[in-house]
Amino acid sequence: MESQRPQPDEALVKIVFNLPDRCAPLTTESLWAEPLGANLYRLRNVPFYFYGVSEQDVVKAEEANGQLLVSATVDRGGHSTYRIFLSEQTSEEQFSQDWVPLHELGCTYERATRRLIAIDVPPHVDVYAVYEALELGEKYRRWEFEEGHCGHPVRDSPARRPNS
Image 1 (cartoon, one colour):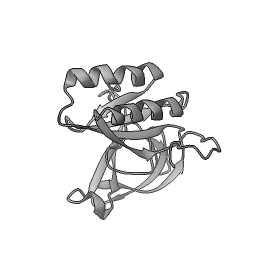
Image 2 (cartoon, rainbow, N blue to C red):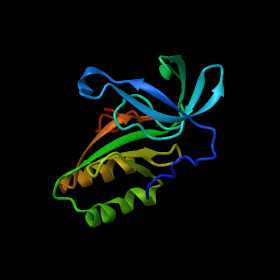
Image 3 (cartoon, rainbow, N blue to C red):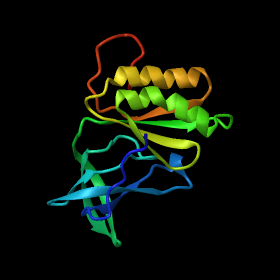
């Protein structure tokens, strides 16, 4: 299930993250955020390109050249962000079927393109079960995936785990 986009009547603003050189030709990514006062903003959607933040994190942003540029992460919201890159062969019908286990775990997603999908994993969701489902999709060549940010606590274990 796709995530709920911010509603038009919500008092949200766009904030801007500068992207590292590896994201060229893109130089920035903007996200919706809830103003909290004192130049603090709570992220209200999932980043597609920027690493190290997730929905509900609180960031500091300062106005520069008519934009609110993010300068720091101040507090974590406990969410994690994963991204999947659908293979050319994965149809919409196949993706819908493959998405069911992630949806049932409590994940939502936003789409940048037909192939690029950002996944939000809320704090109450078992991030290890999500990781297993993502690995399964990769095993069957439906997609490749990456971790944008793990905001969940991780277990101390030598086994493969989120953010390792």
